Every structure is written in C-alpha cells, then in structure tokens.
Amino acid sequence: MSYFERTGASTYRATSNVSGAWDPADQHIAPALGLLAHVVEMDRDRRGRDDLVIGRLSYDILGTVPVEEMETSVEVLRPGRTIELVEAVLRHNNRDVVRMRVWLLQPRDTADLAGTALPRIPSPDDTPAWDPATVWPGGFIGSVEVRRAQVEPGRAAFWVRTTQPLVDDEKASRLAAAVGLLDIANGMTVRADPKAVVFPNVDLTAHLFAEPQGDWLGFDTTVSFGTSGLGTTSTVIHDAGGPIGTMTQMLTVRPR
Image (cartoon, rainbow, N blue to C red):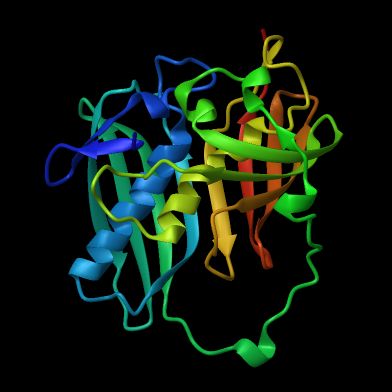
C-alpha cells in the first residue's frame, strides 16, 4: 500500500500507512513532507524547469492533520534562470497544515571539488536491526525498516528504508521518496520516554549537497533539550556513499 492516493488534480488521500506515532488518528507528517517535494518537482517539470534540482527544503508544520484527504498548491515566489524559490502548501478542510519553501538550483559539474569533512556512519550491513514499534505506534512506523547503532539517549546513527511508494500508481523521484523519510529522525533516538514527555517538531529544514542514491537513507542524529521547553534534533543525512546533507528540527518539549 502506498502512503497517498491521488483523488484529483491537486488532492491526495492519506492511507493507513501514514497514521502517526503521537496519535494514530493523525498523520505522521514525514510522508506529507515527501508529498510536497513530489508536488514541487512535478510543477517544476511541467514548467520545463527540470534543469533545476532541490538544494534546500524548509517546512513549517502548522498543526496536526487527520488521515484524510488533503489539497496541495505550488507558487513560484522568485523565478530565475539558474535559481528559483518555490513555495508549496498542504491544506486540510481549507486550513494550512504545512508550508514549504524550496530553493531550486541549476547543477554544475563540480566533481573535482567534491568533498566533506563530515564523518561517515557505519553502513546498513554493519548496523544492527532495530524495531521502532517498541517505542512508537502507528502505520508509518510499521511501514519502515530501521537499523540503529544507539550511543546514548538522544544520540544514534541509524538507517531507514521503506518498500511503500509515496503515491499510488505515480512515479516519484528518489529525492521525494527520501524526503518522505526525513521527519522520522526525531523519534529514532529519544532523549526521554515519549510516555512521559512529548517533543513534537514544529519545523524541518534540510540542506542537501548531493541527491540521495539507493534504498537506504542514513541519519547521524543528536537530540538536545534545553531548560525552558525548547529542543532540537540535528542530523547529518547519508546515503550509502556517505554524507549528503544536514537537517535540523525545532522541538517543543512538554512533560506530560
């Protein structure tokens, strides 16, 4: 089963594979973030701008959304020959749920300059299997395979993959499919028991210097809580070839 089914030119219905970890009646927002990336790429291609690639994705998560039908829209805020800024919005019952802004950039051959000092994490084959359902409920958590090397609470390296397509009977790019997994980072190495403390993220921003390759997406993640109810989940994103970008999520930390 896919994560979404198309119901119209700009509307999609979430399936049970999207049900959330905090409340199974609501969506885990991860697949919806991938859906918006997919919508932006489709709009880009329709406009004949498939010479541009996504470099940054910045999401503001405005509220929860039930496992129901949603509407999407896309607007080019800053057109350009080599750089564009695009906004996409996800709505439910005429209420904005997620706002996304994406920088689209024209790629160039910089193979001779490529490199990073970000450390690699052990490969999926060298990372033990772990069942996230031991911590979290929900259809989305049940739809993924995870391998994790836990260092301490709030610190781990892990790999995630899924066999579920983003949209039923619709081809999505590897990038959009990978983006649909990014938001899982906040729950894969908890700093506190989610039965005692809730710590949902209100945003997600990812910067990519390479497009993901292969089935596995890797995360080198650190969760930090402050003293006044704020927190962050910070991640270096990997594919099998090594680091490909960075990501941060802002948390609201609330003891139950």
